[in-house]
Image 1 (cartoon, chains in turn orange, brown):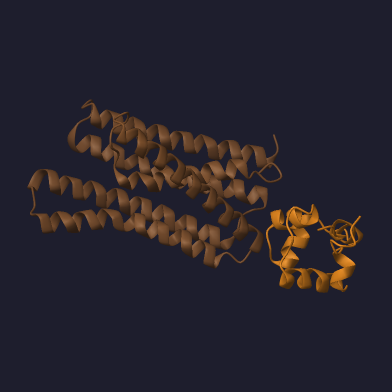
Image 2 (cartoon, rainbow over the protein chains, first blue to last red):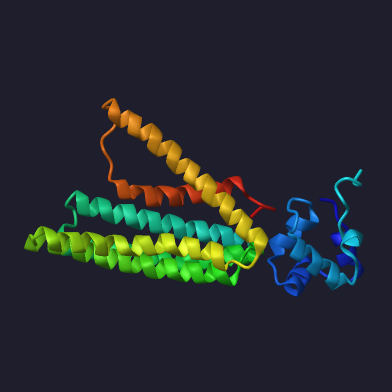
Length: 67
Length: 195
């Protein structure tokens, strides 16, 4: 699933490790989500969106709308 | 050399040292070069190399960003179980060989030797339950399925080689280390971001 995680992280000058620490997940999890290799569960997706103060659809792109 | 590479190399060297010591001391014991108690003690001592190996593997996982508290707990359980296993197995074999106890005692010795291995299987189940990181948990489930596939494939093939008298019978408990090798294979297949 496409997402804006890398951009949002860069805007805040956070490394993958910084984001992983804030989300209480492993750095590899952040990397896998960011690169689209892993789609997070709904609770984790909500946590990510809430951390950035955004709605889920502002972080993750719906597969049906992705190009 | 970056941290990921150097910690991985260190971990592989410890694994190599452990396997070398394990099979080397087993060969010394089996061939009678170092027979009896000294041979058994050497064989048992080789398992101590599991401690630096597990620690270096933990450092490698941390460098790769795939370390977790649940995994560290699991590793501690596995080290303790391995050391208890060696002590109970060697103790049991020695009692069975030198004192020829009755069948009931041999049953107890067999169960005692198997108990730490059963604890390792339980620890794997606990790891899946205790892992809070959903991505790491998914990876573990995949690894377990691949390892199970490896065991089913190899034991089926070996079983039929055995039926047609092309291979000797092997002890059934070997499926556990075989499953462990399957896990190692799964991690190689699954390598993620160079880790």
